[in-house]
Length: 284
Image 1 (cartoon, rainbow, N blue to C red):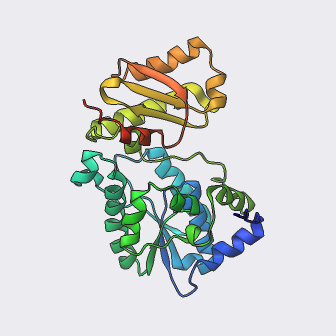
Image 2 (cartoon, rainbow, N blue to C red):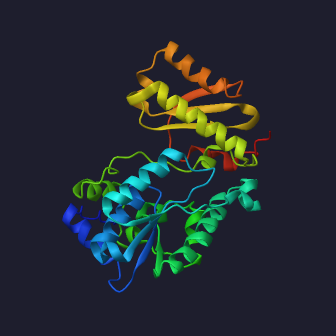
Image 3 (cartoon, rainbow, N blue to C red):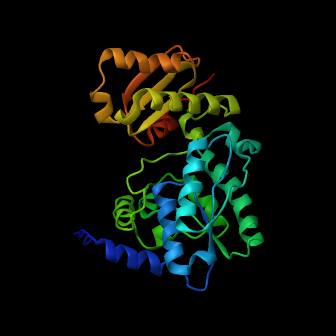
């Protein structure tokens, strides 16, 4: 019979995370500015000292500009050097093709930039925000790409789940403790539809305009490009339940104006695009 693990309090989580860092190592954190990578960065500073830690936030067509600005500000708050290297995922055929292994090519591109950057900065290793839940998810091709270059995974090594990441982040007063997940814009485009700068821009523009429209009413928001089937807007359940038909029509109109004839609106579900892997590839 399986025995449920004993819940850990914030002090126990902190002890586990700090122990995951080798005190003789210096690290460059792959810092998206999300909850996971923010906790890795904060833990690295506590375990190693700010002078032996740096943060790098990749800049590309697939990363919303607002996320880069937020990452810069948080790195400054934590007192570490911050870098914004340019990555070129679209130069990789496997990424552009947008198959089920797209994330492998995305993370491979990131590592191809961060590993040399770490070396140039005199830092020993690159660390990512992979957590224990990611290892159990069963579909994370990007994890393999990072593992191939020896990237550190302090959260996973400490056994921290996503929920525990949020507990410890709140304990350490990180503003990201309740930040919604924010995957790159390419994750909004259905598998099989080739990724282009124009599609990334359209998705990013739609999400930005919808956030402006809905304001504080929305927490989780995705605009999914489904090719010939149009687009699907996903809103967190609380937001969706609070919208009347006039509001929903305004949501659809935002996306229609950007070039989609058919627009669905439904409840947000993380990873919903993976459902399409078992279906025929959408065509444009």
